[in-house]
Image 1 (tube, one colour):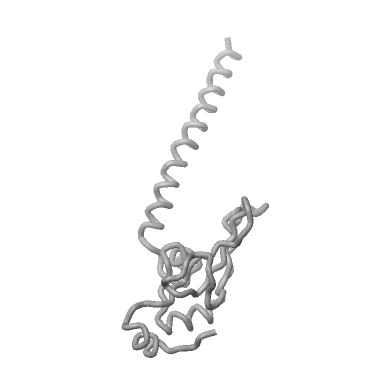
Image 2 (cartoon, rainbow, N blue to C red; image 1 turned 90 degrees about the horizontal axis):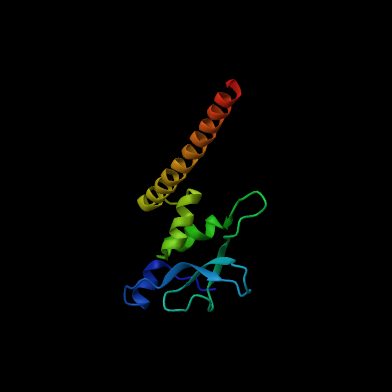
Length: 140
């Protein structure tokens, strides 16, 4: 494992960001599972990485939860060394409370909630109308 301070990394690599937090795929067919890793910037997604910092299981379990695990101490260390998260890892860290939430995450949640509300209100009004018609028929 490489332990270089951010100053050494900047001098060694000409000031470019060289370490990133990324989702590395786990090689298993039809079963997505990702490792959250610290890797060099120019490496492929599933190639060698420096250190595993957590895991992410996007398929919901029996309680309808998507499981994420982080090693916050090591994430703090790598951020101190100058590492930057990819968009997907930054979103997961924001949802976990490590970073502030990105505004688009909130906007997407509001849009999904707005799409769900009209469908729920239409089903409740349809059932109420059906009950009213049934009561009218019973009265006659």
